[in-house]
Amino acid sequence: MSDTEAENFDVVIRDGQLIDGTGGPARALDVAISGERIAAIAAPADSGHWWGKLEIDASDRVLAPGFIDVHTHDDNAVLRDPAMAAKISQGVTTVVVGNCGISLAPITDIDPPPPLNLLGGREYFQFATMAAYLAAVTDTRPSVNVAALVGHSTLRAGAMDDLKRGATGDEIAAMREKLAASLDAGAIGLSTGLYYKTAAAADMEEVIALAEILSDRGGIYTTHMRDEANHIIDSLTETQTTAQRANVPVVVSHHKCSQPANWGRSPETLAFIEEARKTTTMGLDAYPYAAGSTVLDPDWVHDRIRIMITKSEPHPEASGRDIADIAKDWGCSLKEAAVKLSPAGAIYFQMDEADVQRILAYPPTMIGSDGLPHDEHPHPRLWGTFPRVLGHYSRDEGLFDLETAVHKMTGLSAQTFGLKDRGVVREGAFADLVVFNPATVKDLATFEKPLQQSAGIDYVLVNGTMSLMLGNLCPDRAGQVVRNH
Ligand SMILES: [Zn+2]
Image 1 (tube, helix red, strand yellow):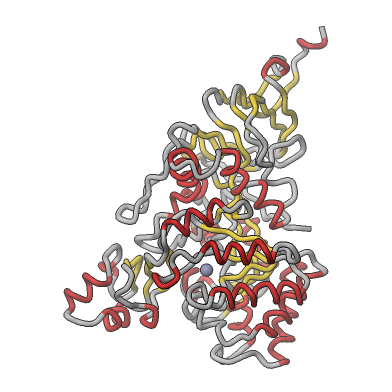
Image 2: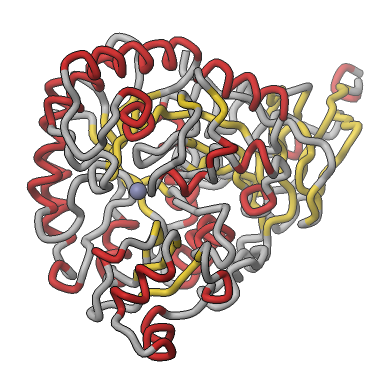
């Protein structure tokens, strides 16, 4: 009888509830994998003749596309620590690196100024070309897939002797050339961090002159905007104008309404984005916490918000402490303490929870961790972002259903960033998959104890390779460079 003839696969995942990443409802479907790809999907009644070299029982579990972390600073982490435990343990199978204007390539021979030093010190900036960086990723074969953005601040640092001014015509031409070569080598777009001192002197025309290179290459533009506080609407306007004039899709990075004076303004900013989306391809990402984290800058330190140190080169013992306590111990002002602690990183408790929830719940919002992997006492988003959205915000707070939560971290992300055959479970797609327990999935990393693995993530497969099993990392790593062409 033909229906009893065995069909052989590498992996068969049975009896789970499949959430396929499109936003559609969960269904009881089994999935079979051959090599790197999903080979078959069928109801349990029709998969009895499947045989897997490896069989996974997903009963009482959800099977979903592996999560795509659209906002990371993992450029160096995927090379230095390719097991990528912080990400694989959350169910993340792809990271987008090079955000906020900061990328490890293309640049060499530099003492990285903040915020480029978020990626590490001088010894790690070794890639004169994006092709060399992507080749190193391929050789290292980290556990997660890597899609790379080119950082505007990195381009500036490579082309200019003084970052405190706008680029000249010749410097813009040099940056355009490097950007084009990077895109041809496989980078998927350009990021800016106009908020930072390495790029703040760049005007919109400089950014447009670069972003327009993306247009006929299918690249995407992402931006940590010039101002996420009092002038946020001006910055959103600049972002939309840049995207329109360069004729490129744009993503507003880690959207937030920053600083107490702007708490409660997310209805205004989301209304702007909703209106902009009628004429501009504009997306946004967010992380599920009311605190941000980046370098410590004495100019950003004040007593209206809590600030916690994540690392300090001269004072490593300060990691995990509030700067207010440190300043009290030292008998100095907050700013003086910040100067003494620098170079350093910090967590800024700068957002309002109601804004965070409103932004997360906005349908076009994708999830990105913005985790900082080189901090000694990192923001908990590094280890907790994706389980926190699934557990805390979807299941416990009821902010959106589980299918929506998954869509925000898979299908929507792949579609926005042009990651072909990723972010969905369908026949022929890459077998990037996660099996999790919807009843127990939960972030355990906290601001006090940030290095905690999340609960409830059982299995993770990357390109068909088992990468996390019963919550434990597997030795095989199968990440690839993901290109959008
Ligand atoms: Zn940023």
